[in-house]
Image (cartoon, rainbow over all chains, first blue to last red; front, side):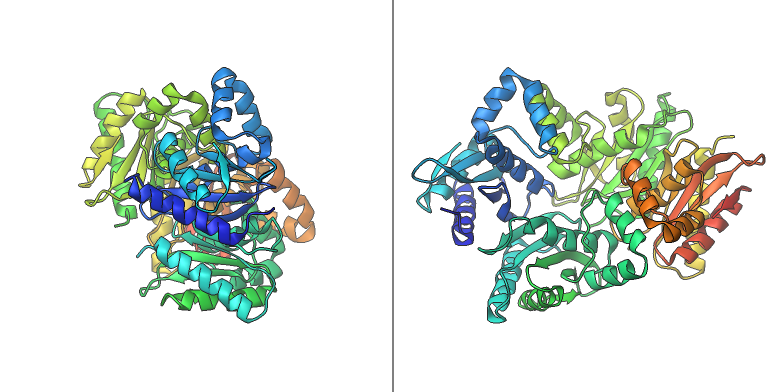
Length: 141
Length: 141
Length: 141
Length: 141
């Protein structure tokens, strides 16, 4: 099962709605496919200009490693040089903190990832999970 | 005048609609701000996975050089090594063909760019211009 | 409101004057626009040759993240691997220490950043703030 | 003999003055030292945001190869793949067209370079040479 553009759009829209509901700072949200390639992205007005690479880095590392942001952060805290090396081998495109959320189908296969950035990493996750649940998918943060 | 997320979304949606109306291949569309940073992006179902960097490269070169895709292509045809060098100084992020469309405000200042890819470069432009006109802006292709 | 070349020049000149008044080591100062692009830069005689990338990295990270140098340093001290990853996603162009100073307009929107390097980070900030205040802007260090 | 900041500033100021006198598009001017490192840079209001890397690329290639922009262009026209390779080995930082001007001392030793961009390459050179002559140096374009 692939993530359609229609679903990606809804994930983004509902993540942003949740952010406004929680009164978070302006969010930026990316949805990647199973190959780590961008399907859709939106940056809310007022967000810093460099938010795409951060959102992308959270989601990209998640897909490429098959490991969501929280697990990457634990690995980074235990072994910082390993995640620094991972950042290097993936061309500098990995941000190992919560907000990178894996999308899995019913059999558990990774079908993509969502990257959320703008508020605290924990709040980013809450908003992203709301977006993912709105399309009937299960996120792994 | 900055391009709002609301306007960027509409530009993308109307560009995709125009593409379907013209029966084009699946399109991908990015909107960048005046500093060349991503505001929004969408890739239609069925498009090749690597469409983000192509759409981005068309729009990014346009903003950074202040020169739309058609003018870049003319320069590349006259002096290929110059556009190759430009690609180098901008970190490999320039695709000098039509489909990179500058957005200008009423005084002529560049306020961002749209990048469209998926069909022929000429068709990409037609679709993108329809999207841009739908929000009352003027595109320079 | 954009930072004009005239203002950027004055910020640099007054920062260097303050440095000489405080008897600091030779300073280097860059001014970036709201998209993180260079408006002006000067390196004083006697400064090490590699000062441009340091000054630029302080200011560039500030604009891209919407977070000044002191806040970046605190984040780096709390979570070093996060700022290392951020450096990666921004192409190695982030130096997360004081001396990266955000420029805001009266409504609080980021309109650019100043990067100062050459003496201690704290002295760099004092000199840069003097330069910024000389043009009637408010710096966030 | 090193190029002082005072001289670099004057070169830039006089290049910009010449550009206004000739009614050129907004110019951007960089001055590099004998090691290819930035001493000073200015971008006129209204210039495209990506002008620093172009100005820098013209001057950097000149210093690194000891060959000014016109000679680099001739080499690129004769053997495009060679200049593409040079761009690669210097990290993508070479723009082989006129506007990269070598600075030499009285004995002929390279002491730095000036990079000018914004109008046609030929006009960029005319403005840059005026700037260089204003400080009593000889440019090789």
